Length: 382
Image (cartoon, one colour):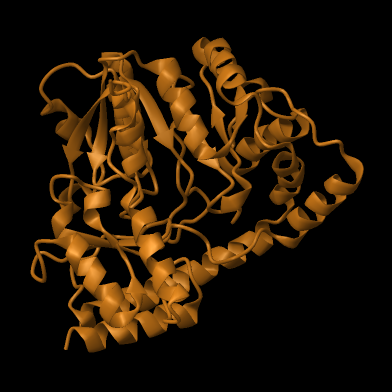
């Protein structure tokens, strides 16, 4: 008799990881790859963070921390909200998490029941809908495009049939790099408050913005759940550390879930991350390099036929409409890797309905790689 397999694991793959595997296999065969598929800074953690980690290895026992993390890091994050946003966020409301991924799991479990309906933009980060599906929460995709800067609006939400229990927003967004500006954020927060919709704001790309500064949902409401991470601006993806700002009403449930599911976030990463907030000049230097990459690609990609690009206000992505080139973005990306050595991600990862006509470029790598990728793509499309 066959053993039961839970349906919770029957979720779509995170396709960018499949692209990474194909790129790795190509490299293992001795061929070169220019990585534009993964949303990962091409830089290391700042030197003071590395120094703090070395020091911690020598003097600290590295045991469990509290489920919400070590107090010095939570206090430093509280100060960060004052310094960066002018907001008074109590350290007691800040929960350190094992990456933002852990934060999303705990947030969804604490805020939603099985069968609830949660809206999210398509295109958007695929793990939102896949985690929701694993938790038996219905994700309601909101088709968005350039007319709304690839972001939801109250008017778009009004067109959704049925009640919503939650809304997930991301500014800057993955995969488009677009942002929700001050007035639009205020309108979304007020819309959710008036209708009893729990707002979850993904702010992991804050700090990586170009023309304008990102605003936080916390500027308009203490009821929003905010998720952030040390992976992007702080350039620490492999350290697996993030945080969430938790509404008062959810503090105890988030704590209990964190205790039971994850015990505590990694202690070494926490001790090192306290130093990250003293590295602003160094980290802003990384952002300046991303901006150079963005400007280069905005100039050169249209010469390769990628002339319908998202407005990359922040993050390190460009989302390209390739409907005039293909109706199968997965096959398009496979050919691109095989024929040019440039690894890019198919839009089906971010939009199950229209993603077959889009691809995403990540420009977090070295400037020289971005220039060479553009040269190869131009040659490929001639």
